[in-house]
Image 1 (cartoon, rainbow, N blue to C red):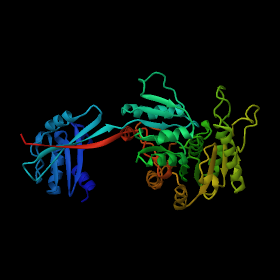
Image 2 (tube, rainbow, N blue to C red):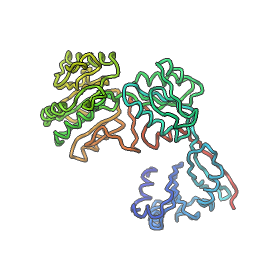
Image 3 (tube, rainbow, N blue to C red):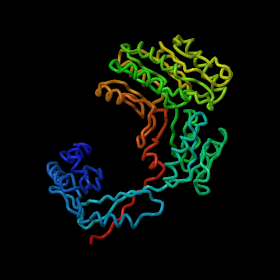
Image 4 (cartoon, helix red, strand yellow):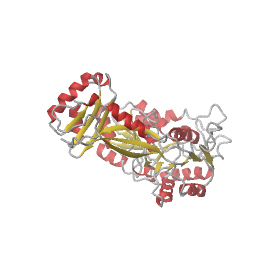
Length: 454
């Protein structure tokens, strides 16, 4: 029985109510050929766990409140109680420690006693690179919340608003170009680098820190898929395809579902409804209350996106909507592009393979689930994926098969506090918006203390 199976067996029959009743600690230490469960739970759960442990044999030890042990276990805990362990841990905590979790050391040697615990020490100054192409204030706020909570000094490269909320030196904003970013990323005083940007920018940051073996947190590009099965509601899928494309900020989001894989049975109806949904979108200046879609970040980027649109047409994709600047006076010469949709797209086309980072949605028709999943996973990206079906088994199977770090089922675009956001493959490293992000800015240190019994 492997360790995970052992743990599941030990907790078999322990109901949620029993666990909630007096639950204080449930820690797990996997050793060489043994599993040690450290538990301090209500009596009902305790009795059930002991019963399960007895059935497992002699290779598992359960340390219970008061220093007791489960029947049938051969190892001894040397009467080290949780209270003693807690005192030892508290005594050793330094001011820069985030958390500590004591682990009792079990030994065949009755003369040996000790306590083992792990602490998270705050990492040093970390520059964070934020995009100027989309929600830099929101991204900066999200990053900064985790960083400052973890006790770090923050240096933001980008555009954000902080005012005098923090003491001097805690929060700094630096604006600049690639040379400024390179100087920060390669500086010997930097402990870690966090970046939201392109894959090329991520590679540059990793190279800059290579000499110092510096860790990085990267949220990079995406060529994300929305997958609609035959049993999905066409109207809901159409609304999701438009919402997931993030037309509101002109598609300038790494999480946009810019490829819509529509099952043959609903393809045509969904496409018709997408056209209707797009009629509600109005490009325009931000000061106009009627505006629902903004501009691209620059004229150079506008020309780049128009180049992709021309490439899609040249490679045989069928233009369903948009395809160029709006006709309204004052917008045609600006950095605006209409919401654009291509049908008849195949995965070998450029617009289906490369991140455009603009308001361009590629629609692909499918009827073979295996071939469809192969196409979904064929890009070097893997950030988000949206799955639409009424079959829960299909949803789970598809979510497991999709090479993406953030998957929605019958939902799109929404983020949930505490849910880890991040990508597979070249879409980045690490996770954001969750406890892991906070812990990612600490370093683990294990401390073992040997002491005499009594």
